[in-house]
Amino acid sequence: MIIIDEISEKNPGDFHGNTPLHIAAAAGNGLLCEIITEEIENKNPADNQGVTPKRLWERYQRRTKLGQKIFGNPFRFVSLRQFVRYILLELIF
Image 1 (tube, rainbow, N blue to C red):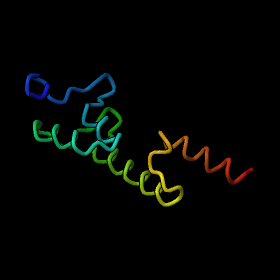
Image 2: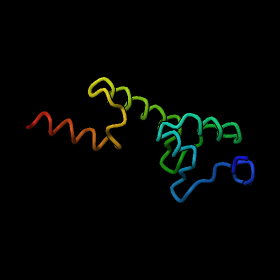
Image 3: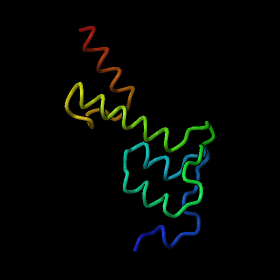
């Protein structure tokens, strides 16, 4: 049994409008995105800033492909900021 079957609000938003679907998409968890989207009507809800899960998914995909291309390890960097900092330090030193 999956918890999503037992709760009434399938994709609740927080104070910023982020939903579990936003979080799953940003983390690149395709299976969880699929489970959530099967249960909700609005498949691409925007948060308070207008950012959608689709946009977060695309960012994750770009970051992963770039990491693989440059370093061969897509999960080396947790954030884009960490990735950029590493690149800058490599170029400077």
